Image 1 (tube, rainbow, N blue to C red):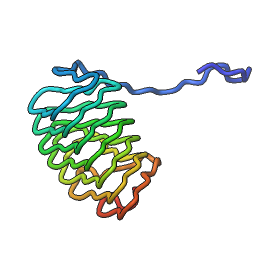
Image 2 (spheres, rainbow, N blue to C red; image 1 turned 30 degrees about the vertical axis):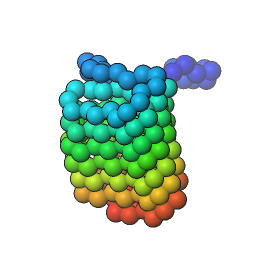
Image 3 (cartoon, rainbow, N blue to C red; image 1 turned 45 degrees about the vertical axis):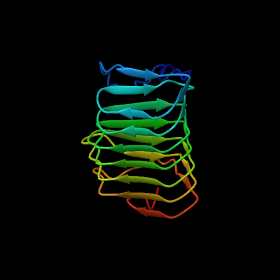
Amino acid sequence: VSSDDPATPYVPVLVTMTVTDQTCDTTVSGAHSGPVTVTSGLTCLAEGAEVAGPVTVRGGSLFADDVTVEGPLSGNGATGVEVTDSVIDGALTLRGGSGLVTVDGNSIDAPATVDGNSAGDMPIIIADNVIDGALSCSRNTPPPTNDSRPNAVDGTRSGQCSDL
């Protein structure tokens, strides 16, 4: 980083970047009427997508950024779920996953439950969400974090999410 300080005109900053070769196997964009079910590969809900129905991840991974889901979003045994800056008009339930779990900056119009997920070396992020209901987390490895960005919860917070 360059600086206007003559004594230290350049300040080194260490950066770590992870690049994956993963691309979307299925992409849902625009208006989609009916359920979206993920059983393998990576399914992406494209920015601005509107799903009128439930989203279920039974295997494989889901990436959703700036989308609307008019129904619940659930994962059971997913290899990864990343939902950011989205509106979920229903419950969010993520159980028994074996990879990335990120729920960040969303509006969730019902309770949220994150249970029994194992993310390995990756943190489980539950941050900066507005949840109209309870937030419950248990048996996750590692325990979820909010990266110092608390959730607004209109209900009880319990288990590993009691301080998030």
